[in-house]
Image (cartoon, rainbow, N blue to C red; front, side, top):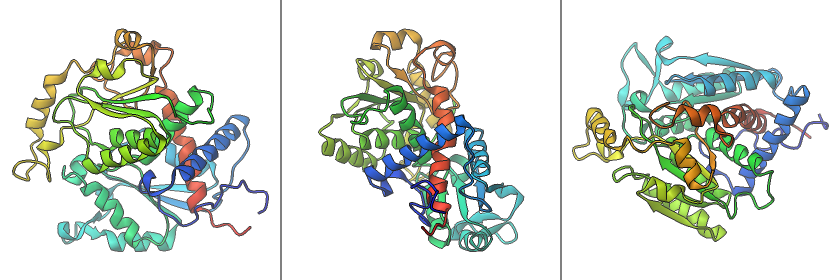
Length: 361
């Protein structure tokens, strides 16, 4: 076993719920491991670092990139991923939402699956989390509380850690892997219009990741689309530690000007959802009506050229004609859209290798 890469088993047995649970150095180690796995992928080098291991994938929400990159990744590592849809089992549920013969306590599900396999990955937000902001993350924390094997967050209503890791790798690749990471680079996380309701997870996690890597972070959104105070405080903490700039503005063009990277992505105005709504109730239609006022928050080729041709980023799936024009996704030479999607495979393989392997060196 001495010929295994340094990263296999590096965080053995630990959960991966959000990147800020780890140090900046640890996050960089994940990206370095992902870089190695990506190189091996292209060279056709086999990486059976999780031979015989099983990961249970619990999807309360639909998925293309997340499901397929996780299932493919664990297979390429020599293990297997087992897909679990909550509507095909007794749905794993928090204590206050138990319904006899329809649900099962997360505490029981986590302990059972812990005795079968080697990891549990969960995705939950939006309707599946009742549009109560933070409830999805609480579900994942409940799995982690009871599981004896690593729990991985495949996106909840507050965080999307593997997406922001993939984004970080794409940005560093675009710059040629600078030693100073993103220090001195302007990174813009911007609202973009969508006709659908989307969680805060991606903008919050991307802003956190950019700040962890030293970027000057600009967050742009219309009034009413503020991110969580605790997330903004953490972004400021990281930018202060680097001596980088942090600014929140309400103008997309102002934020884009002179940027190195722009990440325009839809999210929903939190004041229409508990615990932030005026009556602690969910107001989905009102939220959609409000965000429809900001259809001009769309990324076009013209806007990118006026800004100085920054790299364009988006987690996908992007709402064409709303968040972004077709031309940006299909013909803009500095779009990292598909690079980010590909890197989901590699960063997830990195973390799975690090937390699910049990290695004695």
